[in-house]
Image (cartoon, rainbow, N blue to C red; front, side, top):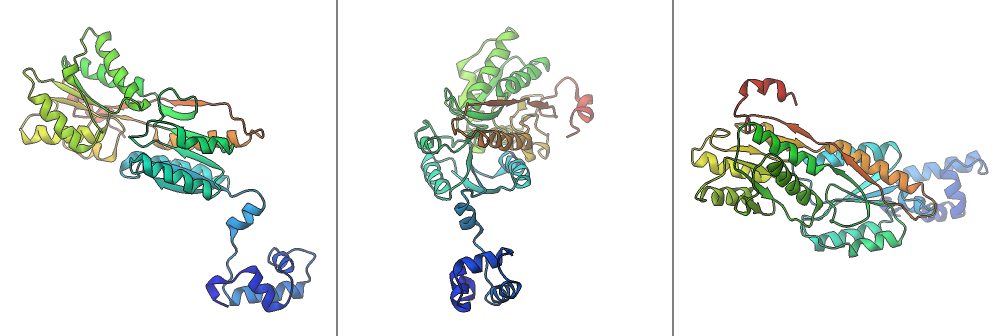
Length: 351
């Protein structure tokens, strides 16, 4: 009997007793004599028997598995969201199964199949950048498995979700730049089919118009929000006949790419060009100068997503009424945008 492959059936055969007797003995059932329980436990120890908790849970109709799919776990945002998810899930007895789509819809589809095959009791999803439809998630809904989206959601879907008020965060960021004297503010925008980037662009545009500034197409650079996109975007902006005096980026990654170009050209931040990003990635407080950014309440988002899943799980009918939780952003002002009040920096960068 291979020690690492011992099963209940192996124990039963070795002891010449029934499988049900072994199972009850391992669970210290009172219907099994103490001598039999001792024999079973002694043999289990000798062959290094390990119970299959998943199989046992499935026999009882529960897997206690919560599936989570994220675009990636690089950087601060998604790793912090995952920490929030695991903190709440573990407290209520759920194990978390994590998948990465790596920003690829094909991987996203395969991951959904894997999660369903693992008999997860719920699925939490933040969409890949190139996901344009909901079809591959319909299998989850048809099986009456709670499905919760967080951060990235397709526009127009009536689904349960936990998001940040991206519009407000962008509006506050651009208003701050205007208050610092910036008059020609550019925007690095993400794919507009995703809620986060669409709402951040709306916030950017509305803030400009509310302060009497025009929205200029030449100042909006749509990209995938990577560092190299920030490099490309800044080079295009600097090539304009009248370059901008500030950039609001819908991602910290493209913001830091923009900063690299400005430093290479010996342009001063924020004096020649002010910068504001979005997400409060860890590196934003390590750059020189530090980058002003919008905090997304990462851990709170993860915790809220699990709580929403648990509420849906309690609905015995399996027909879930879509619910939406909207968290409030926080603008963290740092040196990259402070043109007029540098003396305020020690007071506004406490975190």
